[in-house]
Amino acid sequence: MIITFENGAGKERRSEIVLAALRLLPGAALRRRGRGLELRVARPEKLADAAPALENLPGVEKVSFSECELSPLACAGGDRRFSNPLDFRRGPVLIAGPCAVEDEASYLGAAAALEEAGAHALRAAIFKPRSSPYAFQGIGWPGLRIIAKAKKLTGLPLVTEATDTRQVARLTEVCDVLQIGARNMRNYELLKEAAGSGRAVLLKRGMRATLREWLLSAEYLLSRGAKKIVLCERGDSSGDGSAMDMGLIRKARKITGLPVIADPSHASGDRRLAAELALRALRAGADGLMMEASQDPFSAKVDGRQTVGVETFRTIAAAACAKNRR
Ligand code: PEP
Ligand code: MN
Image (cartoon, rainbow, N blue to C red; front, side, top):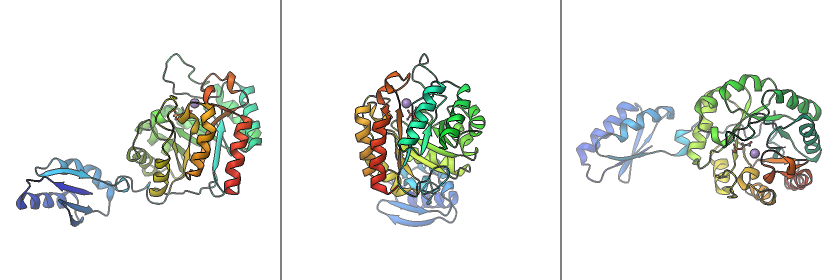
């Protein structure tokens, strides 16, 4: 943590600030740094409460942190290679499926075709967070039986979005990875519930969320007991075509020990761009992809425009495999 002094803060004022800092953070190691002070503490979780008190002191211009001071567990070398339910050890993990489960026949058909085309896990969304309250909200609980069938049919793990704390326990009976969607990245109660489920959690970056906010949400999961976490970059838009931030994927990978995958479907909003974006994300070092793919994107109720067909998915899977020996 760095405390920057105000220009006008004299020697006495600065000493008072140092004493206050040591009172709030006993045992902190101090070092002068430019017009301020650097503090290193053994227990970074103490910083979150010390900072508001410190930045309120007369003579303090600002208090700043590195991402890893705020999210020590996310930066502590989490499991980037876990093998169950997703295996990141042999190259990119490909999660594919339609945006939403719509009915049994189309979902089972897509699941089997995508497994054959190279998917390692299935998107299996039965609850959909929609911008419009009038739009299809997902098939709901009747879908649980359908996705369970798909899992049995394909042998693939299921990645399922929980949109509400009350869904978590029942979803975990069948689902292998709980997805926290972009809209819910800042839903801290949902993060706590998902963390306590014992399942792996896929955490999407919220729209316009900074790396710092994203990692803080990951920290919620890790500090509440989640062991297996995947970060997923999905761009900043809700389908207006703006792409995703490859620099962010690289940086998130570099400073955390967590796998970071990319969702080119929601990032692009357009199947013609999604395939190219998928390959770019892999070149940028992404640990995998989440792609909307189905047998008949043109009849999808949700996000069909950004859903690729099975053959396009097969091409992407082949490219990912060629690059990474899967
Ligand atoms: C999804 O993956 O189904 C989804 C709703 O995406 P996002 O949360 O990124 O908008
Ligand atoms: Mn979608």
